[in-house]
Amino acid sequence: MEQLPVPRTVVQLPDGTHAYISPSDLPVPQQTGAPQVVHIHQAPPDRTVQRVALGSGIGAGAVGASVYFGPLLVAAMTSMAVSLAVVALVVVVTAWGLVTVVRSVGGTDGKAAAKNLAKARRRR
Image (cartoon, rainbow, N blue to C red):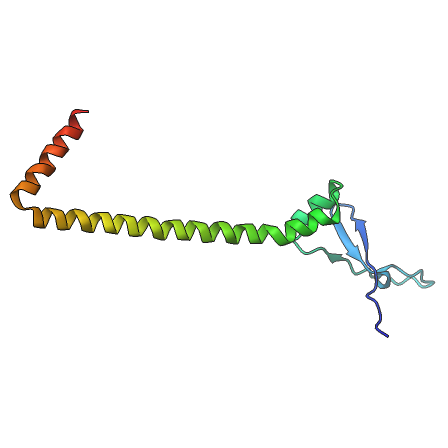
């Protein structure tokens, strides 16, 4: 039979921060004058979203969703941004190559047409 993990308790420290303690860390009354040693385990710093959600009364489902879908959303948006950047690069290179080919093949008529088009655009 597997043994369940020891439950931990959340306590608020004098400076206002919260910490996890386990029952073995609670002070035991001693008859001697020796100082008591209490080990306080700080919560990991990467759980801010969960702490804010739990502190505002949101349920565990919302916390689980933020933990799971947060990084998933960032990865999906990054993937879309990279895909759009590649498509934009392909469009720019294709347009540049097409313009270069038309200018070189068109000869003087092509250059004159390009000049007339540039003049017409400047007049607007």
